[in-house]
Amino acid sequence: WATMLARHGVSVVAYDVEPPTMKMNNRQFHRQYFPVQLGTPAVLTEQSDAVLRPRALLLVWPHPPDPSRIELGFWRESYDRVDTWDTEALAAFDSDVVMHVGHLEPHADRVYNSSRRLAQNLRDHFELVQRVPIHEGTCQAVGSSQDEEALTVWRRCKKKS
Image (tube, rainbow, N blue to C red; front, top):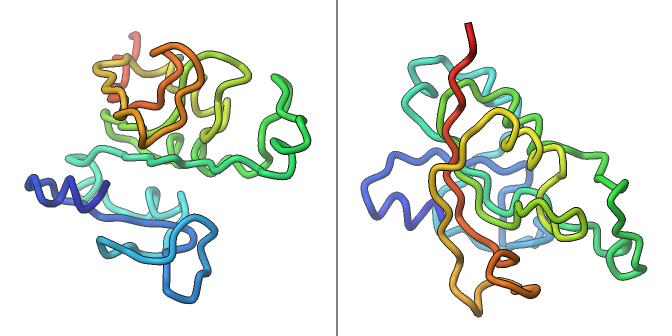
């Protein structure tokens, strides 16, 4: 995603808590197509407003599912992963635009790759500006078109005075 955005002229700074390497340190990927720096949500509070203000936060499949719980059928509405770095990143980000790649539909049993807290915080504090379904074959379609993973773009709601 970072590579595609950069090719279209977007200024991208990419972070991951486990930047992929050929040593297979990252559970999801073993190579980089774009320079990815080591970083946690704290990076967002450490950067100056001049660096972050003109940027959007892009969360790409931010929360891989816990396979052992999924495989055992323990995915329930009340279950949310303890590590909610996606929610921490959103809370630390003070700019107005957030983009999310993955599954954020409000179906309790369908939030595959983001914490429920992130989905709720986006719905509570941001307005959905655009939703672009990810092409079939690159995602897991669950049922209807509303179940497809998508790129969603959100704009922060104006604070009420």
